[in-house]
Length: 272
Image 1 (cartoon, helix red, strand yellow):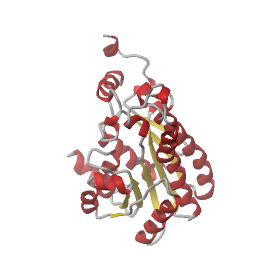
Image 2: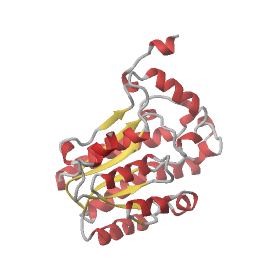
Image 3: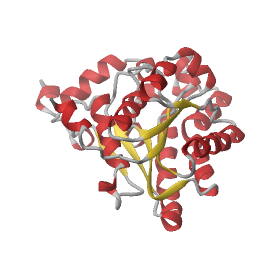
């Protein structure tokens, strides 16, 4: 019943946008893509070529009637091409964009924070944070997003607090949030486009499950959060609200979507 009510709202009717980072049905970006289309939007899907070979994005494209534009976000020319091809497909400007991209070679290969391989760290920053700037800058310079459009990046509270095994992804998320604030100012002045980040609960995704001790931390966060952990489905609903016209005056914000975890000092469940 809840799904039928959501589908009937048409919050994104006649809107168009780019969704990055959908790897498989566990991805937050995958859920966002599905809900965008349910709410009346038309979308373009994008991911790195290697991620596309690993994932199931073709199934999502068929389900959502979307085209796929492969894009290695470390290559600025490919980012510019993504925006060009999206505008060509849409027949002009679009209205929203989701950045759901993150990867750390140090984490994947088990290098601790105190023994980082720095060329891998640079790659982490490039993929996980600077790509956000590249995507926004491409849209800004090409005047690709309609006035009062909305750009979102997915982040995590490790940008503010220490989570030892999250390694240099913590800095990546801090950079990502800073980009949203700074570009939010410039894009707001130019086209009233708003730029925000959503700081999500730890969520069971293919990428997230690669962090050491992830399952234990999900259990801890669940006990710490008055409302419990926000799942991928709930995060997608929140993204839809941020893409809609009901949040036109929200920009340059890091929005915690974590069941209250971010402002809970300790809970009775954790003390017990």
